[in-house]
Image (cartoon, rainbow, N blue to C red; front, side):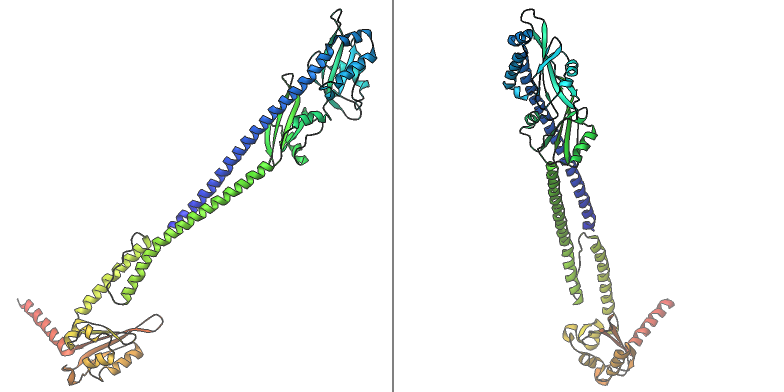
Length: 468
């Protein structure tokens, strides 16, 4: 009963521990990955700031060069292109996709990448670019697909009058700028990088792990700063341009390797918890078995002693079932003691044989009648015991009748050699087990005249009391 009560409690405790372990481990992993993505986002923001700062220094030094101002004043296009070529060949110049000069607010010349044929859009691009020294995202609409550029405008001042005589435009197209992506994704592990403009992807992604396309689609649809999709963690944060929040966003997306590690760790902890529960249940079972086996051993010994007819007692300790059994056994011992008292004080002789016809008990009346104690006749057969008390032939027929019918009672005439005068009262009972086998024979006999004398004495004493 103790094991039945505690084992479900242990199982419930195990389930609670597993749920608590999974919840705490998941929260710990989520917080760790979120912190990791925030650090990565900050690191990439710093890289972008340094990248733009290098371009800004290059373009501003070019715009402030007095030689370029003199070339624009002279209207020498060839010299202007040569000067722009030197800028492209300078450090960070290779990152520029757009490099344009204006003269008196009109498009004048450019050294754009041959990949971007934007002549028919340059006028609107110049007009849409804010003035001055401030990076801005500009949407270009060349055929067949629109592009997005990050561009800045720098004033060119006349060395003579100090007035603005032209402008230098420099920038990069984000749609296929692999240099920028490589710079942003350098050193990242298991994280994909995607630039977004107003929630839509801009250019290719920096792929660092194999992530299904539907995961990216769902991450874009979530519109949350961070989250998890099928074991993939994502972070969506706006980028700062010119120190201010811009429409550009940075999407970081991890693979599910960390989630799989979490699942494996949870599986390991689950197995460990189940093993601990099983070991605890086994220990409890062994302890319970020990509690039960001790009184069972004493009970077996007690039953063996009772079977052999020895006096015995049983103490079941603290187990409820054995306490009830102990109470029953105590009542049984009391009942047996009472039976012994009854047998010992009977006027009739009582003789008991076992199923093998061996004498196992005689009472005091038998010893008084025959002069023999139990230790003198124990183990003897009826042919010796009953012949001595009843004669050779007087008991045999009743014994046979008792074997056949189960019992016999009546009067017999013992021979003179038994020293019994007159007829004797005899009763033989056969005790059988449930399977029908004979377990014991009980023989009771008495000298009838002796019983009559006792009855007369009782009547005489009763009359005296009445007369007084």
